[in-house]
Amino acid sequence: MTDGRTRRRRLPSPFVELDAATAEAYLRRAFTELLDVAEELGDPKVNERPLGPTTNAVAALIVHCCGLTEFWLGHVGLGRASSRDRDSEFSATATVAELRRLVDATLRTVGDDLRRIEAGEAVAASELREFLPDAATSDGALVLHVLEELYQHLGHAELSADVLGAR
Image (cartoon, rainbow, N blue to C red; front, side, top):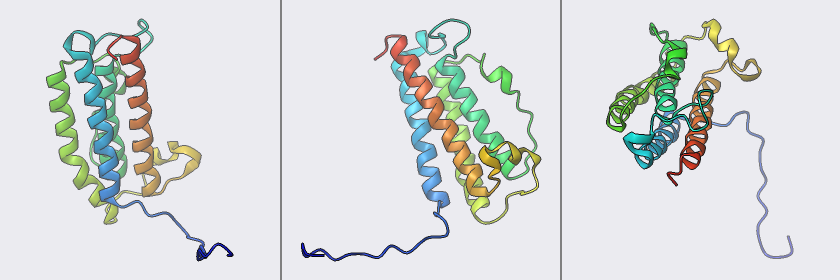
């Protein structure tokens, strides 16, 4: 190159590595930001549906995020038994303190779950992996799906806070 910079040759990479520590950091960040929204709303508004009965309250979104994280990592990923009632997550109510305890409980298992998946302990035979986008059934796709859902619902929570006038 004529400007004195060296040119780096990029070699094709067969994959992009997503290690357990990086996935856990992003997952924790999503939950921290969800709880920040709940704190902004406070107990009086965290259970309000921003635009009526067909929208979700922030508390319900956080309960759902805890449920989906355990379900996809614990049940689908590692084969743990699940008694999840997904539909009831969207009508759940909670105080901010209860949400914090629920998130803390979820986060206590997340790091171990991700390390176990990274170590190759995941159950690859789950038929539920077929529901992942584009039939990408790898362990990485499973973890990315959880992150995708968390950040999607974080956006929903932030919009709800805006509508409820907390921002």
